[in-house]
Structure formats: structure tokens, C-alpha cells
Length: 250
Image 1 (tube, helix red, strand yellow):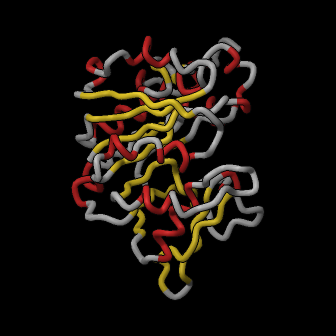
Image 2: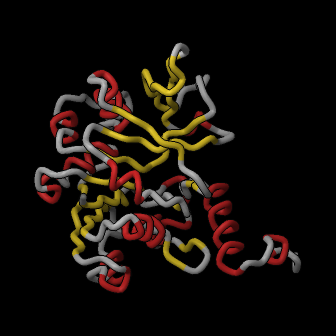
């Protein structure tokens, strides 16, 4: 299985921080944000990775990641997303890299200490999404569970005003080679993007989507609040000091 890290976009929700560099290169405690999803993949045994980026700061990644060897990667490629076309469009750029095999896809602003190695080893095809219970599911894709069989997802709703569960579909997915065929069948959403939720719903329609709950910490870092939360968690985890130690001079 090969890895895909999606790290494009302008990061406009984090202006003015992202005037100077790509969002995914902002610091999370003592490392650039993108180091965390790379580590998630490497710990799962995935060492061939492509990073999809875009915007005016795409070249910054080469100076930070280089050829990936220092981060445990055997092979690192880059792809450039020319327009803000959505997660599914960014993933479509990786079809040649996938080489008709399975891919683990992770958003570049996701930080987690969950170990997904068993999920990767046991993956046999279709799609698998990773869920996490969150206080603000309306910010994410939200699974709708079958009331007769709560273990089964019957649909995923994108940023619903009235979420039907407290779970978020995290930015971590496993797909077989058919994902690129499904991307070709979807149409842009009202915001003009190819939504990964539509791809996941195609797998649901085919009866080929499974899910697992992430154990451990997980957070995106796409807002000031979630960026702060990620920094606070990793500062405490790395140093072993409680968060209060970092604010005792305020």
C-alpha cells in the first residue's frame, strides 16, 4: 500500500499565519504539521508517499521534506494541484503513483497518535473510513448509521447543520484501486469542488465501505481553535508536562 498526503489549499481560515507559508508547514509544537501524517503512515509500514500541494507556497515543501529519507520514507513524490478543486480532485492526481494498487490517504492537517498498522495490514479492498467522536461534528463529514444495525453506515453527510451522530469522518481513508474510477463519476458540489464524501457514498452504495474508530488523540488543525488544541496536546505528550505549565507566565 502506498500513501497519499493531501496538503493543498490556501489555508484562508488561518490568515494571516498562512500568508507566509503553506498551512501544513505551520508548527505543531516542535515539528511542522505535515510531519505528523507522515509519521502516521511510516508507523503503519507505508514508506512510499506522494504529497499533493498547491498554492503560492508549494516549493516550501521541498526545503522541509527534502527526499523524505530523514522521516523514514523510502520514496517521496510531489504533485501540484493547480486549482482549489477539492479533496477528491487532489486524490485523482495520484492515480499513476498508486499504480493500480491500494492507497492510504491522509489530510496534511490531521495529527493523531493512533496506530493504524493493523487496519492497513487487514485491508482487503473497498474503502475504510476512520471515525472519531467530536463535539462539533457539523464541521466534518458525518456518518449516518443504520438504526437496525448501528455497525453499518448508510450514508455520509457533508457538514450537516443537524448532524445525525456525534462522529466525524476524520481525514484518514483506505481505498482500493477503484477509487479513481469513482472519482471520475462524481460531479462538483455547490462550492465547485469534487467532494471526498461523494466518493465515500459511492462505496456505500456498492456495499464496500467499512469503518473503524480511531483510538487515541486525533485533531485536524485547520482553525485557530484546532491548531491550538493540537499544539497543546503534542506539547504535553512530548514533554510530559501538563498544559498548565505552558501558561503559568500568563
